[in-house]
Length: 276
Picture 1 (cartoon, rainbow, N blue to C red):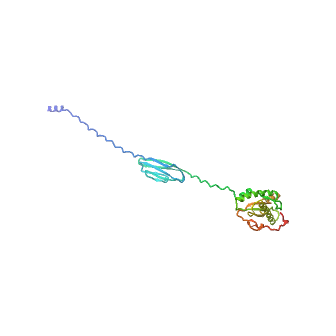
Picture 2: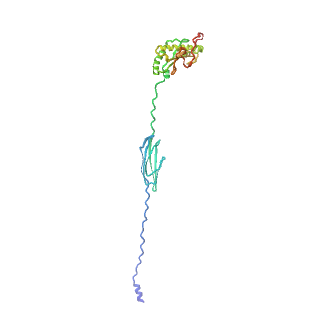
Picture 3: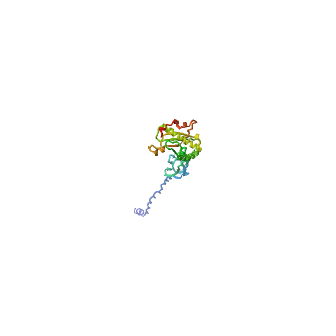
């Protein structure tokens, strides 16, 4: 018994080995989505005139939604579009995908079309303008119709200018207006104005003007230049004035019927007691 105990005490103890920990397995990393890339977004040409067109071109990668503003809307990954805005316009492309978004801009400059050069306006003055600028009135003495020296000078200059004007306007006629001051009756002054117009017409035709293109009319005292009751004013009103006749045709009748606008010819009988 004692021997068994000793033998048991002398038996060598076997150490217990702990089980190794389980090997650690690293978790696989999920790759992040690639952000969209706008490799090209351009308009060619970059400058046009109003009414012309340009080409908008784009190229995008890794995007699931692509939009361009200015009314173009959703587009594919790559493409081309003809555009023709009326004014300078900036286009913006927005690309979106699982990896994020990207934006790009491009601008088309539109130049306003040059205004057409207006046709040159005619610088040729009208008959009315020519007469207004080149004619001189001829003045008369009280109750007279003879052409006095200063009136001869004025009418001589008028004749030279009228020859050129009537050559430039071969279909026009001119009117010689006879005027009087306010003194005397309307009937008498119509006759006196007619005699003054006739004297001026005869003077002009003697200087070479065509008589069939010269019409005479008497306004008597109905169209005064001034109305003050003094000699200075009366002298301004005793005159003949040359005006444009344009389409008026002289009538092939007696002189006293050569009136524009259907005026009544003056009476042949003069009432010297009603003088101007």
